[in-house]
Amino acid sequence: MNWLIKQLLKRLSKAEKHTVLTELVKHLFNTISAEDILQEHNGEWIYRGKNLIPGEKDAMIADAQMFYKSRLWQVLQDDAKYQANRRMYLKSRTENDMIAGKMLVYNLDILNTRLKSMVKGTGIFNK
Image 1: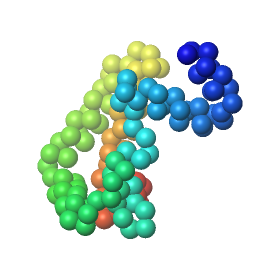
Image 2 (image 1 turned 45 degrees about the vertical axis):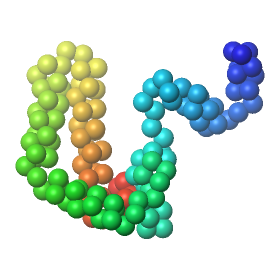
Image 3 (image 1 turned 90 degrees about the vertical axis):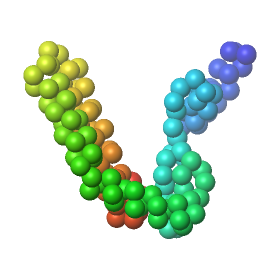
Image 4 (image 1 turned 180 degrees about the vertical axis):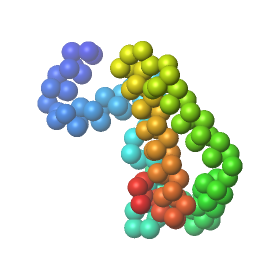
């Protein structure tokens, strides 16, 4: 079986190999593909491969607007920034410590970017 998989993979492009291997191990890991995240196509919102009905889309936009304005979101952002600063400037002993702090800031930016897009009523990640 192992030999067969190797032979099949030899014939695939790098992108095809990635797709096949991701599919083979997705039950082992928390793999998320582009089809699993919120997307927008022709004004329709698609989440986990299924179109959202207008009521679901409207509810999600309202949730995003409420959460974006909430004190909880501000507290969570401040906590993440504080932990990142601690990791990068107070506790860092190695380059990896600095990288870890930067990754925390990057993750916060991902969440903030998505949330802002949804507040504006778009399912596109960075609008």
